[in-house]
Length: 226
Ligand SMILES: [Zn+2]
Image (cartoon, rainbow, N blue to C red):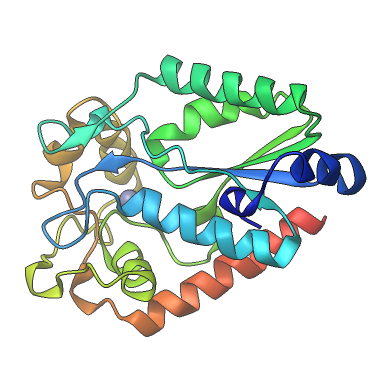
């Protein structure tokens, strides 16, 4: 169920009788190459949250579309300072608790938010999970995986503009580690990738995206039921 299907006082009655779990997707607003919308992370995490909610009977709250994306400057990003994202989540969680919501599930769609969301794990009534940890394939940024996912859920992908970015396959483990670390620093992402793309989106397909989506949702359902 989605928050925009709910009314008060029915919702309060439902909270009392069914004790529902609330799911809050958290995304980002940042460049995803020339071929994917800037809202990509928020778009994907919103879709996954809604599929998961349908399977598990959760209630989907509005996506927090802004995340911590300073690593993408000077390419486009609209970012929150980590501490402010944490404050927003703290306030939303406190408010939900006051409204007798006992279980809150934060679904993350952007790597830069990880530090903040790991902090939330200390709260026993909050679970926070990043969706890309629920698929086998190595994740990327505007590469094969993310572009396939977007092809599966959106008609806004401009495949003609898709360009290969940073490929790490041939690099040593040490070099991979160095690049990963640098890419998370403010302004670091364009430094290591040159064009803001991590991976190769040119072979992405809708079919692969659908496969990734089913895999992610299936594994998340398992996690939520355990
Ligand atoms: Zn992304």
